[in-house]
Image 1: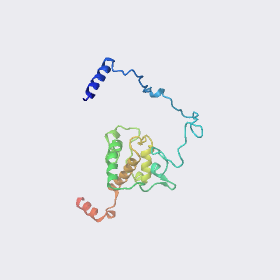
Image 2: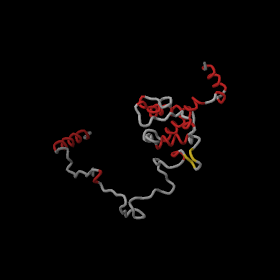
Image 3: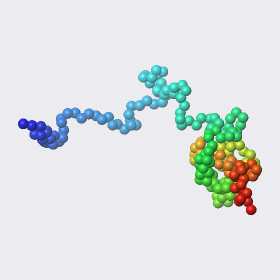
Image 4: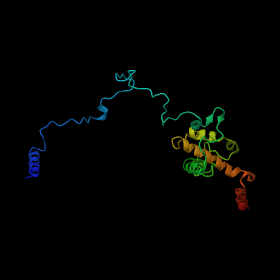
Length: 202
């Protein structure tokens, strides 16, 4: 005779009548508030560490992936001065990204064409946004444009909080392309581009 169902029924009844308690002590889950948990504080001693300090130095050679380390990629400069080339691969996708970020962040003041004409610029009476096609700005190396986007210039604030490093390089590349689109000599273009330009000229 199989007594398992009967025993299960009896055990269930006992638990219900006893308030679902087995009579055993409940384990303490230890769910204290995190702020009240035992923890080490910086600069405190730690007997468990080899050097007795709670705050340990990172292993030699490690670099935080969040670190904004100084160098050509993040400053736009090397030992010779402003970079005259991009420190990241340049392709159509980078220029597309640069155009998108420029139109979103920079065109508000500098205008979509980069000529300093925009509704916002009309109301900036103290100092007008720079015309990026000004001959003085056209000679800026791409690293200089990146540096201005990173650190700001004059009344223009740094855009680093809106544009990460790669996006700032993308914008700098797009600005150079935008300048070139207005000032390139026809003879310097590839044959196919020359033909297209001649077809559009009056």
